[in-house]
Image 1 (cartoon, rainbow, N blue to C red):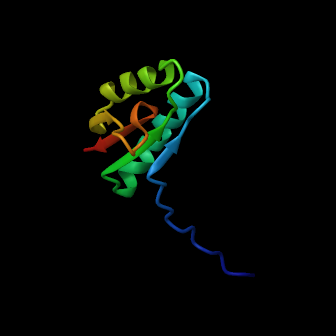
Image 2: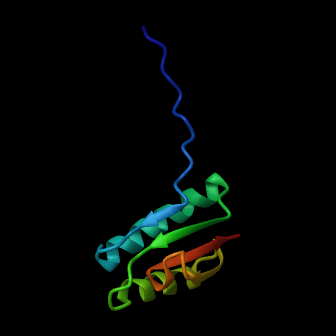
Image 3: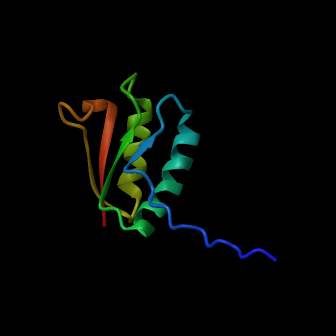
Amino acid sequence: MAARKEPKNIRPSSELYVRQLPVDEALYRLDSYLSQAVTAGLNQFTIVHGKGQGILRRAIQAELARSPLVKSYRDGLYGEGESGVTIVYLV
């Protein structure tokens, strides 16, 4: 019988890409990602949601405001993606 390989602890990327997703799918991915990021010990990450009409950005930031896992968040600065991204700082 062959030996089983133990799964590697894979650290989540420091970027969550949800651009052009429906709001409910983006929020589902955000919820899942937040748990993974905290478990992996990330201090911060970037959510790429795009600019568009701002609907996805507002929904994501409202969800971040309610999360006990989030210390703070902000829009990206010039060179980071500006209003097309949100920078998230975790507890």
